[in-house]
Image (cartoon, rainbow, N blue to C red):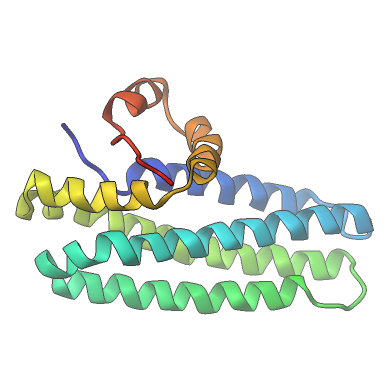
Length: 186
């Protein structure tokens, strides 16, 4: 059984980030309805990214700290930096000034700066997974993963599948239900 905390969810996050970046870049920022749609979608994605980081910190970082202390400290610091960048992005998106294409360009550039930073972080997390597997027992890995999955409500599990499955290749989708730990969600 292959356990990977990161790859599938990160593929989903990349898909959401890239799709929104394209949408922001192509938007007519003089149209209030389009601005509202983009801001709503952006705020929803930011909330998801914050929850994602919280889940990693709560369920995966304790094991990483035991096996890879330096790397866990770096990941924790990066999560704090991401949170600051996301707060700055929220401030920019909720700016009450008149919405226009100059403002849209500022949002677009800020969002893409965040994506550039975030992509490096995702790569770092994914690159430590093989080392973590090497240094951990299957029970330790499953315990961390099951802790996360069991914390989800049925609605949260469903929401996760909605944004995750379209990002996976056919083999990953087929294996997803076979490999995914069973949830005893509340």
